[in-house]
Length: 134
Image (cartoon, rainbow, N blue to C red; front, side, top):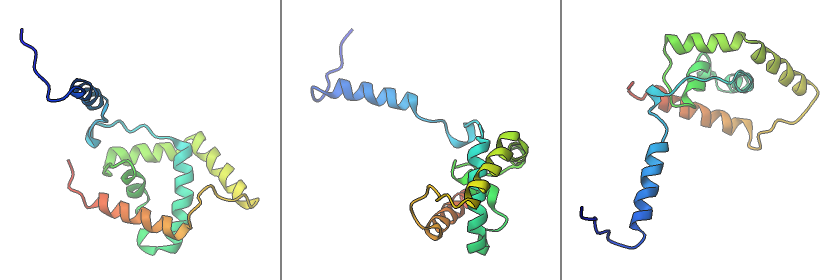
């Protein structure tokens, strides 16, 4: 068996690293599982409601926006998963916790202004919503 001559001394390590990275790469969006974090979704929904108040074009696109962050398209199955997560005790508890914290005047964790965050989220949502489905 003849060994392949590599162009430079570190080529074998580079080839090995590329193989490992390729094997560990995430699956395409269509193959990704839809594991939802109800607590994170509750925080997202509260923030999105604030964005809807500032940017009327965002109204009615909450699920699209949430899924666009995961590079996923909205379909009936995902819509049902999102609805089930929003009915869960973890979601409802986090929603109450965050609303209570806001009522007490606890500063939000985000450091950039809300307007910029809303515009960035809406731009990303628009980009993902208009991509062709895979």
